Amino acid sequence: MGDTAVARELISGDFLAPRFVDARGLTVRIALVGHSATLLAGDDLRIEFVVAPGTCLEVIEPSGTVAYNARGGRASWSASASVGAGAALIWRAAPFVVAGGADVTRRVDISLESDAVVLLDEMIVFGRTGETGGALRSDQRITVDGDALLVETLDLRSVPGRSLPGILGGHRVLGTTMLLGMKTTDDVEGHVTPLAGAGMLARAVADHAHEASAALDPIWSQWRGRVSQKYTD
Image (cartoon, rainbow, N blue to C red; front, side, top):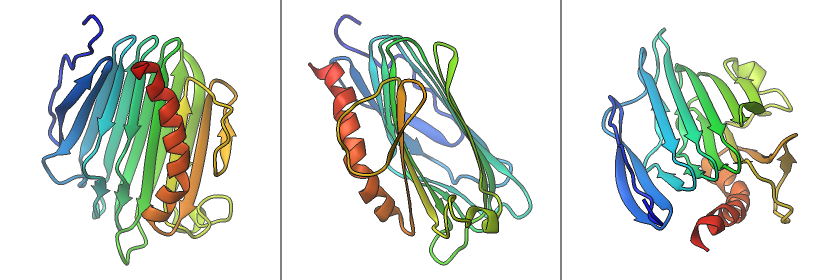
């Protein structure tokens, strides 16, 4: 509305409630607040964002998600986002913990229109303290103007399989930071992989969540500055 963005529709579900935090210029911040235990066997948690053209949505998660022991059952978690032309989505997700005995599928679908940008940070943790961690299959599909930018499947259901060198190599934490819809030539600490299209990806594996965060924090901060600058100048 004019030069001020607004949160037009916030719809609560069975597991999460979106709460308005603040709006400054073209940027709106919301928090995803959990109001029930997740994920249990049979749960199907779905998150959907629609970001209007020319605006910026920042998502805050006060607490993470835990996929609990499914006891023979399965659970699913999915997030989809439609980011309009010239818009931005900034989401530093809280840790996604796959507890011992869990069996969960996780899917992220993001569609960007022209000149849209997404900055996404996510962390998968296998097992709570003293646990090996359950089974996870993670799928991601990112498109720009309908064309695929990133299509990835991580099949981490097998403990021996995910422990191989080149996958997790015995570590229990996988952190990922993605800049989608743009690239930057700035020097950053850590290993960054440019995508074939407009995007970049950085990953870190570690034994503890804080170690993965420490490896990716400089990259997140630098990329966030680039994205935020567009909506604060």
